[in-house]
Length: 442
Picture (cartoon, rainbow, N blue to C red):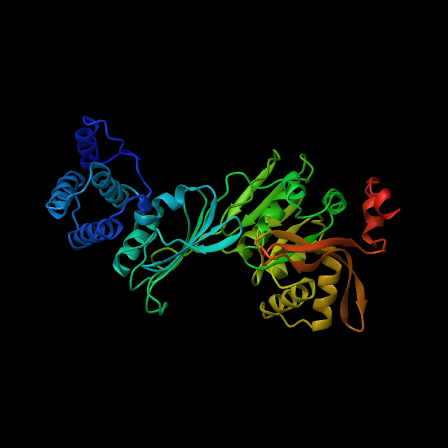
C-alpha cells in the first residue's frame, strides 16, 4: 500500500539527516507512555473528525500531528514512529497492521482496547505491545476491514462473519450482543497448508497411520475428521484430500474457502451470507444438494454443522464414495451422536434406529485430531465403523495417541499405539487393489 503524503514529507525531512526511519518496535523507546499518549490523542482526533477527501485527510493529519507533538522533545526516530503509527491508521488496519503481516501469528483476538491476544506456535498469549484508544477505535478498524468486502457492522447490524481478501476468516460482534464491548476474531489464512511430510516431521501422526489414511482415501472410504476449535481439522482434511486420484472430479464445499487441492479437476464452492435486504443466502446444504447434480467423483465438505449432514450422508449412501468432511466434536462417539442430532434437525420423521443405520452404512473411518495443552496437534484416534448392536453404532479403534505425562516446561509426552486388530475396512482396501499395508496388518 503506498505511503500517505504526510509520511512521505516527514521521511523526506529526516532522511536529510541520515536518520533510519523504519523503526516499529514500540518497546525500544524510553518514552513509551508519552508516545502512547500522543498516539491516542491523534487517533481520537481522527475519529472525531471524519474527513472524506483523501487530499484533505493528508493535510488534516499532518497538521494534527504537528500540533499535538509540538512542544515535546522527541527524537527523529520517535517522531517518525508516531507518523508510521498514524499511517497504519489511515492506510492500514490500525494497531492490527503488523499482526496481520506476521506470518507466524495464526489467530488474532481483540477482547477490548487493552486486551489483544494472539496465537503463536500453538500458544495463546496476550500481546501487551498492541492496544486501541477506545471502543470506537476498535469499531473503526473492524469497519475498515469489512468495507472492501461489501459488508457493514453497526448498531443495526452488530455481527459480521466474513472472509478477507487473503482468505483469513473474520468474526466481529458489537454491543448489545457483546457485553464486553466490540469483540474481533481473525483466523489468519495459511498460504501453504501442511503436507503429510510436515505431519510426520512434527509428530502429528506416525508413518503407519499416514500410510493407512492414504490407503483409505485411495480406496474411496468415507471419512469424517473430528476435533475441537483450532485442533487442525481443516489442515488434516487438506492433507487427506491431496491423496485423491488426480483424474477424479472433486467438488469442495466450504463456508470460507481454505482447502487448497492441487488436483487438476477441482470445483470449489463457497457459501454466501445474506445481503443488506436479508436475502440471497446460499448455505452449505444448498451447495451439497446442488453438488449432486454436478457429477462429482468425490464431495469434500469443509465442515458439517447442521441440516446439511443429512444430505452429506445421502451422498455417501448413494454412490459418492470417498467423501470427506470435518465436524466439531470431542471424540468419535460424540461425533456420531451429533450427526444423529443434525439429521433430526431436518424435521423428517425417521426412527432413531433408522438414522443410526443410515450413519453406519455411510461412514467408514472416524479420525480424531486434538490440540494438546502444549499447543502441538496430534491425531489422537483413528477408528472404523464396524456395524450395529442393540440399536447402537459400533466403533473399533485402530490407532491412538496415549498421553503419559507433562514435562516441567509444559511439553506433553506420550506414545502412539496400534491395537492388535485387523480392521474390517482392510478388505475394502485390498479389494481396490491396494496391497501395501501387509507389513502393518499382515
